[in-house]
Amino acid sequence: MPGKDWSIEGRYVEYCSCDLGCPCESMGEPTRGHCNGAVGFIIDKGHWEDVNLDGKKVVATFHFPRAIHHGDGHMQPILEDNLTDAQRDALFYILTGEDQPVGTMFQIFSVIVEHHHDPVFTPIDFDIDVKARTAHIGVPGLIRARSEPIRNPVTDEEHRILTVLPNGWVFHEAEGAVGTAKSMGGIKFDLNSSHSSMAYVAWGPNGLKYDFDEARKRFPLH
Image 1 (cartoon, helix red, strand yellow):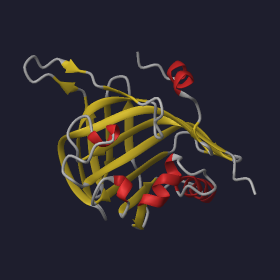
Image 2: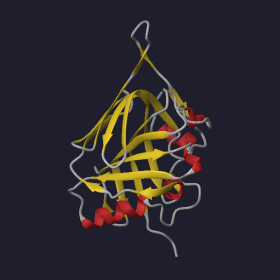
Image 3: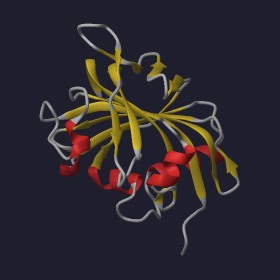
Image 4: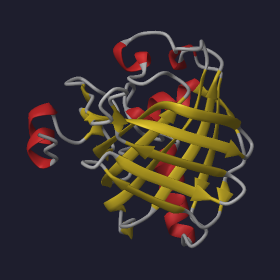
């Protein structure tokens, strides 16, 4: 039976305990052997069947004891408390990777995340400016995080790191930033001057909606 029709286009940010540039994104091992952090995205345009998802925000905290491909991961989703029942169903259908092909983002997370913490529904203060390399997430009692441009330690000028992944499974291009994030929820961590990156994303039932060249045209970072 075919799966549900859905689409998400928006802005994505991630924080992790690795040093700037995150070796995991180039097939390396985590800087400190484990991986703690958070991801979030704002849906600028999205739907699940006839359920509108425009403007919805999703955040999750995570812990992996080794590189993420080894699995045994923990994750806690944080969703807005103003979602309708239909929107909750839609987001959980998408986030769990149901009916999605092997090797697509949410399907991969459905395999490597083996410990699911109860979801939290709460107001979320969250914004991202990909080109300015700034972001912030604020959920009282759960998480606070911010991203800002990397700066040259000698001149204090902004320093740009652009990650380009033509065969990526989360994004094709991402702006590097320096992140600070503290989680006080079910998964706890305190990160200072660690890796952060942000990207324009477009996902659908079969993974990334656009190939590398088309994505660069639609979401130019150059």
